[in-house]
Length: 131
Image 1: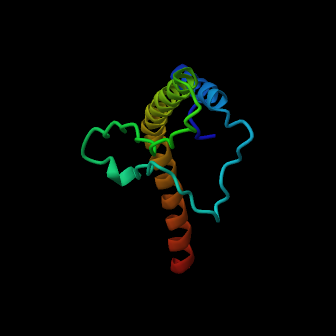
Image 2 (image 1 turned 135 degrees about the vertical axis):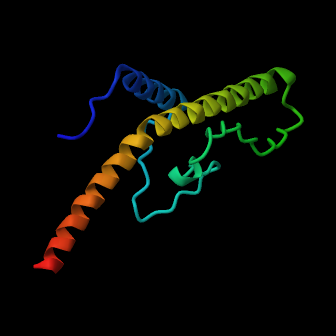
């Protein structure tokens, strides 16, 4: 109908998101229900927050400090954890940037569709009151 056909760039972004989700191991996670609140580290910007300027690039959120393991742990055991934490932070920052690109790409389409539906509903309501 009125839905625009996704472009190659959109397909590429969705593929990137899927590969990041698989790398982070979020395969078994389900999205929250509409009745649940989402307690995330990063607040998703609202559409009206973006008006008037270029959206701010989200900065990686610093993780809570890691509790030191038992004194018996050697330096070689700590290094993989630090590397994994660093990779996790980089992947999450990249995912945030990709999500911002997706939001920036689809926000105008969503706003246009909402406006179209609101205009159609307003016309129906006005025609009911006039007759």
